[in-house]
Length: 223
Image 1 (cartoon, rainbow, N blue to C red):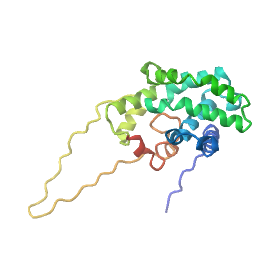
Image 2: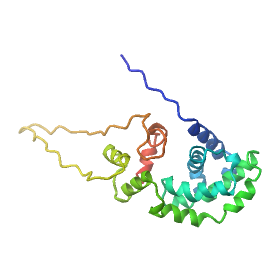
Image 3: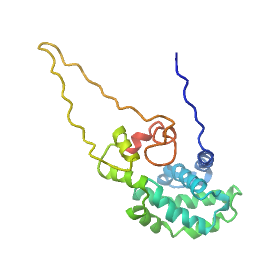
Image 4: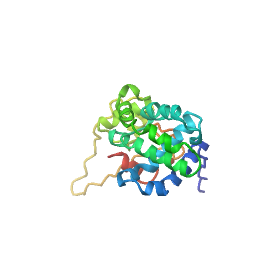
């Protein structure tokens, strides 16, 4: 008999962030952005919105300069799993998000706030590449990336979740040689995946199925 698939609802913060990011990414505001920004519009907007809901307990309709400073110069550098190239896109995409919020009537001061943060890119990039500003999950993931480890391997993911990176090199497995005249039996090894509803190993705060368990997500993480 088939086991019933475990179904868990995502958090309200995740749901709100995803829905708003989808609307933003499909808006005329984003369609007018350069290609290199359009590719990251949903991802960065979803993380910004999620951080605002979950870390600041604040809707983007209530954003002001003080809240944006905390979000973009503190929370994003500490939590966003991003290299320099992606960090350089945070402020331009946030500006577009602010224009969209104003266009949607959610944040009348959106245009003015976009002008305020226009010069913050260097600060965001500097803070986001400074290890002293990283939280534990980001530190573990970035250390793994810099060590050239395969983030799709369960033992690497387990080490990241445990906030450490012990020696992950496996000893060679001894194979029994085939009998004379018999062809060798091919061995295919497949690493088990984390449970779909378990917290993602990357420390994003999302379920695995909504983060690196999405189709194509793990291949992208190995860039």
